[in-house]
Image (cartoon, rainbow, N blue to C red; front, side):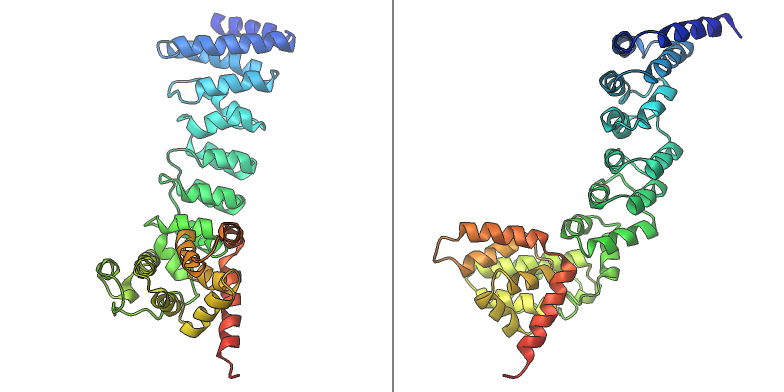
Length: 338
């Protein structure tokens, strides 16, 4: 062993014998010192800090470890072993800064973290500026709805074909995830493949009764349009018709998009706006703003703010798959002869 190695061994041995409050104090002070001199230290100086930090990390408080994590997280030149120790810390308070920001965590380390750590750790990883498809594959499989939504919202996250498929399938019962995925050009087409609801299947290039703005959005045959384009055109059309006071025409457009009888949609709108009609709207994946405009037209004569607030909560909880089942039952019932 070199003299330097012996000296570091003696120092770390002495530190390990200190009481925890003293170790905490030293770790916080050394973190501040490294923050000031880390960029100009020679490589062996960084390694010295690394050895000391690792020794202290084994037996210091969560608060002190979190201070070091926040200090090292954004630095491209930092003690590598210490960063890895912090990333694998069971405390999310400690791990989060380096999981979110550290450029020193390699893909294989992120893959290991994604495989074994908690959902909260996965959420922190979701905030990284870039993620490989091998990492996101594991996170999609292991993560909950929050993780999938965070991944979908990360423009720097790459997805494999299998990962895109899993996200698209999960989105069938998660309207929030579906809305986010629609904004991603790399996944939106996958939603089209997974979606078997028939939404938009009966649409045609005919733009009669549509506003000029909606017609201009329809520059390709509908069968060649993506789901995102179809939904955008539908919602734009409905809003324009409502602005012109053409509620019946707006309901007709919704029915056409669902391949459902207009009379069934109109009846639900007139008789059961907070039940059956919400099912039709969710089955078409209208966003709440469009649904709200329709409901306001339904109730424009009275004070309905509390009812709309309840409707918004119900609409948020309603899953697309459930809405489709309700819609099919309503259509079947409404189509029976009296």
